[in-house]
Image (cartoon, rainbow, N blue to C red; front, side, top):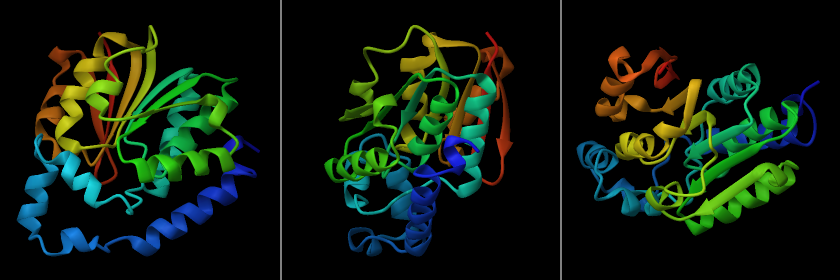
Length: 221
């Protein structure tokens, strides 16, 4: 048994995933009156992301079950001790990563979320999962919260916040990525500039898509 597959984390994740799946496809009222094109434009905008995600404060925006398991497996395989997550939401992906840290013997998971309602939900879930001692949950815009007090070296990064900012967040973290560090970007297709960057071996990465919408990249230089 692992931290991921036993109580309290396993039953908690089962409950959270079931709740997320019930809400899947249900748009918040504040977004329902926007066209698909308008929502897409907001997702890709560096100016509107705070407004967009404020409107989605009650939406889990969770990784899939498969992606969650992938996060745990990759963090365990790396022996990760220092992890950075962009976009906490309700803490589902955070629980997977923290479970890996616990089974790796400990470490530090920096995660960041600007929406107060989600910070409260995530803190409750991470406490229920018994992993808060591993978490540095930073409140605010990630462009500020991830601009300081980072580990000397980072083993793994999860990008799952505002898609338009993936490149900007990578700019903040890149100098700390150790050789062999992994980047996992959810919904990476929404940030083509990021994909172009990590798929260019000349920029110091090897990269491969996973499932429908996840990009897994390794730092090689």
